[in-house]
Image (cartoon, rainbow, N blue to C red; front, side):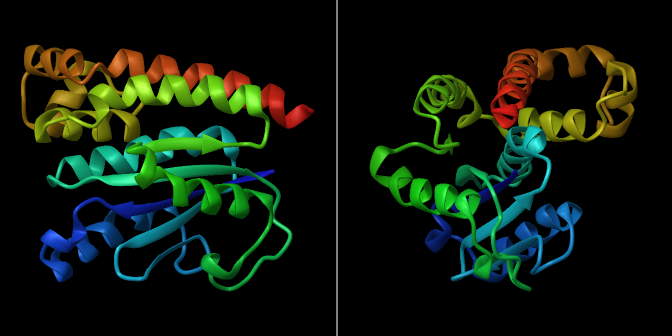
Length: 204
């Protein structure tokens, strides 16, 4: 079982092309080698394979936070399943994870949804997508400072508030305020719930 995130930059036509493409490359670089593990294509679309499905949601949230921190955003679908063809380019690989991600991605714009997932298990998908839609009501409006905090906190899960403050150049009280504003505890709670559920699913 693997997972694939398919996404595109919202409002990319209004942005200076070169500028955000380079930003997106920097954001995706930590997730492995390009084009085998991630790729940017058709100008503003991208795909990332997250080989440990339990990491898929937090990876998508991290990409979102990094983009919101530079006043951008993305629509993303996460597909789960197998990988039957491993190509040199991720966009040419295949399997149910890629099909789920691609087909779901095509529906996001019409549904005005920015983050959704598909495993092929209808009950699971319905329940988790409702949670993601609720979480998107605040994640879609993260301001730069909140988004920066979320990204740094996800990337450094063992750091205390004080240590996160040192990384962000702010004091502990300011870290606490940003954490509350970003609803970070709720985000992490959602991620923990998702991990327990996907584990049970992958056993089936």
